[in-house]
Length: 193
Ligand code: G4P
Ligand code: NA
Ligand code: NA
Image (cartoon, protein in one colour):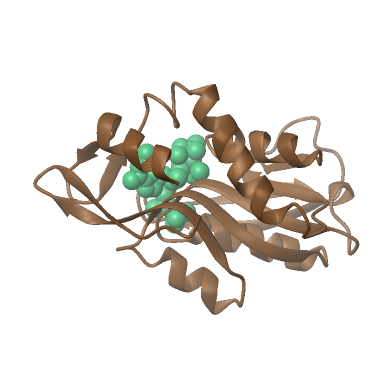
């Protein structure tokens, strides 16, 4: 997605060895116009796939996921990271280890929102080590859903996430693929969409 790559080049900043900061348009402040375009690109790709739900993980996955769901006219579900007092239904859970934060968190989705009739596209803002995506896939498999793919806004191709997701047999569709960083500049490789 050329406009996304251009925006990363313009406004993204590199932090340390392996972090790309995009808080001016994606992970903190949000550019709705760019998000709408992201929604449209994924919707165009999946418009005939028979998707019934978009699934993501809070917090910043919610933003692109909601725009994709809106374009396709289907619900978006976000996995929660903390148990809420109102979550009295049966929960599907997965433990997700964050290499960045070095903590394991349990993510959860109420069982009532997923069934064997669902065909799901997973959406997330970043794909790094893939642990969040694998946790979501585990929950979706437990619910008996068909997983059509994992749609990513920014993939860090120098980390293990993509390979780990593809090992499950589920395809990855990334709008921007970062090959690495060179003296504070982002180096891209060819994207999927
Ligand atoms: P993984 O799920 O792919 O294994 O990712 P990892 O544990 O390494 O990442 C932990 C958190 O950091 C995730 O957000 C992920 O989206 C985010 N992240 C990973 N790499 C980058 C990066 O280069 N730039 C930015 N901006 N974020 C990155 P989170 O903590 O799960 O959620 P959120 O509440 O921030 O959305
Ligand atoms: Na994030
Ligand atoms: Na995320």
